[in-house]
Structures are given as C-alpha cells and as structure tokens.
Amino acid sequence: MSEFDLIKRYFTRPTPRAALGVGDDAALLRIAEGMEVAVSTDMLVSGTHFFPDADPYLLGHKTLAVNLSDLAAMGAQPCWATLAMSLPEADERWLQRFSEGFFALADEYGVELIGGDTTRGPLNLCVTIMGLVPKRKALRRSGAQAGDDIWVSGKLGDAALGLAHLQGKIKLPEHARVSCLAAQQQPQPRIALGLALRGIANSVIDISDGLLADLGHILESSSVAAEVRYDRLPVSSLFASNGDAMLELAQRCVLSGGDDYELCFTAPDTQRGEIEALSSTLRLPLTRIGKIVSGHGCKLRTADGNVMTVKEAGYDHFA
Image (cartoon, one colour):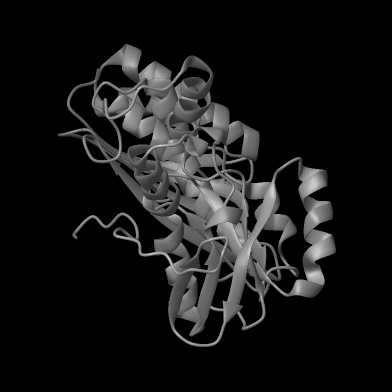
C-alpha cells in the first residue's frame, strides 16, 4: 500500500467547514468575522508517551484528546486538525483501529481532519489542532489575580496511578484498575468546561505535566503566588490507604504524575456560586483547592497549615 493509498483509505473524509481539506498542498479555512484561531501542537512518541504495544484504537483517541485538552484550556471551539505520522510499516489492521479511535473522538467534538503527513520511521504521532474563539475572549495563563480561588476539574492522579500499574510498580484491584487505565489511556478533554469558563475564569491551564508544574506556569505568567491545601485535592479513595509507600505514591501521582488532562483555573471568589452551578450542569466535579496570593511560587499546606516539601514538581522531557 502506497503512502497516498494509506491517506485516502484511512484518513480522508469530507470537511464541510473547510474551504479545502485533504488532497492539495495545503488546506483552506474560512474564518468567521470576529473570531480568532487558537492553534496547538502535541507530539506523542512511542516509548515516551505510550507503550509500543498500546491498543491502536485507544491510541487514536488519546492522540487527538491531548490536543483537544489544549483548546479546552483556551476556551476555544474545536474545528480542524492535521495529523503527521511516522510509521514503522503500513499495518492495515493497526491503521484501521487507530483511525477509528481518532475519528470517533473527532466526530464527538466536530473536528475535521484537513491534512497532515506520513513517513516511514519509528512510531511518532503529531497533531496540530485548530479552534475558534471570539476576539479577546480566549482564556489564558496570564490573568490570575491575588484573591482568586484556585479550582481543578475531575480527579487528580488516576492516570499516573494507571501508568504505575502498567509499569508493575503497583497492583490495582479490579474496580480501580478499570477507571485508572481509562484515565491514562482514554482521557476526556474538558471542552464544555473550557467554553463555559469564558467570562468566569481569570486564568486556565490543562494539567498534562502535573498539578504543581502546570499551576506553576499560571503563577509565572501572571506574576503571582499560590497557597494550595493538599487535603482538598480531589483524589482516588485508594490514596487513603495507610503506609508510607502509598502516601509517597499518592503524593507523586497527584502532584506531579501528569497525564490528567483536567483543567486548573482561577476565578474571583464572587464566582463560586456560578462555578458550583456549572459543576452541577456539566456533571463534572469542580473542586476549590486553594488561593492566589501576592508573591512568588506555590506553598502546599496540610490540613493543619504546615508547609509540605515536594521532591518532584512535574514531568520535564529534558530534565
């Protein structure tokens, strides 16, 4: 099967919202008056971001999901994507399952695949995602203000716990294994939340490298500091188990494990009622975990107010 046969068979579909999709040297997009384009790119590398024998359907889902999460953090409506793939071989069964997983999620969020590239080489997957947001309405990292509440969506640490299970570092019971592996392999981008936070949140980021690392990006961009209560973090009940080993694992998964793809955002305390109502409407837990304050850095406190020492802040490819 040639490169062009591969593209035509598995990755060419109608693109009614684009003026021109797959098939030419470049795609053509129509941008509505008063809108801006939010663009983000993420690469997934075999052996770094996923196991080489990962289920191709789940991998197709995750390849797009991690990019959709970036649009969620910007409050942008997903529209288009390109996909570049380096493949060891043209495995038709693998391609069929991967494309099914990719397009199942694309259809859920109205994303059109408008181009990309394929080449032979080690398995690498790279998506560029594009979405629309009204001018001057995009959510950013740089708007946090002293006095803001700090919120997170969903639960933290499940994806890292699932990875620890796959790596043989811990053996999860059946009920926890299913949910943790789903969080690790099939993250759910919080697009609806991101759209709803326009006009409510002062700053937003998605939690891909760990809570402390990603909250740290907000603090740096906004020139503020934070105080976070560890006992308020929304975590798996498994982390309540006694024992130093479990406590250390819990701290690492929740604070610096990464791969959560939840949103961390800040908002004035006057917005608490609206955020709680939003949580109910979206059927998505939104938890207030701390406060933005003046200064620099982040202090993590226990329930009795003591400052915790954390060894790892988050994932860094080059650390």
